[in-house]
Image 1 (cartoon, rainbow, N blue to C red):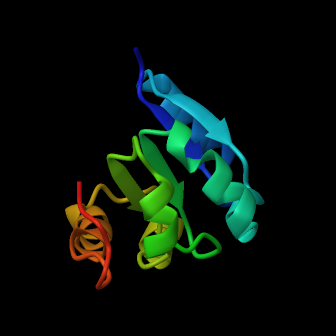
Image 2: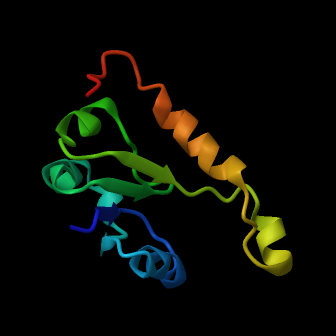
Amino acid sequence: MAPKVLISDSLSEAAVQIFRDRGIDVDFEPTLGKDKEKLAEVIGNYDGLAIRSATKATAALIEKADNLKVIGRRRNRHRQRRQRGGIEEGRDRNEHAVRQHDHPPPNTRLR
């Protein structure tokens, strides 16, 4: 079975298509990140969560995410390089996102 990922913030259709091209079952809900209660209701159905700045991956949200294995966060850190000639394949963006979620807030239950 393909991993199921929720994209809860706005991303380009090209970014969403990258997930699909890799065989990932994607639910693209670009306004869901602003609705904490609704997000908490559905988060348990997903293996992954792709976010930007509108979605806050709080301890309370992660507590409800029974199946969640990864949270990926897209940042505009290298916007100028991307604008000059394509998206840079750089590990620093993803490593930073992993580091952010590698050290959970205090009182977060780890699985």
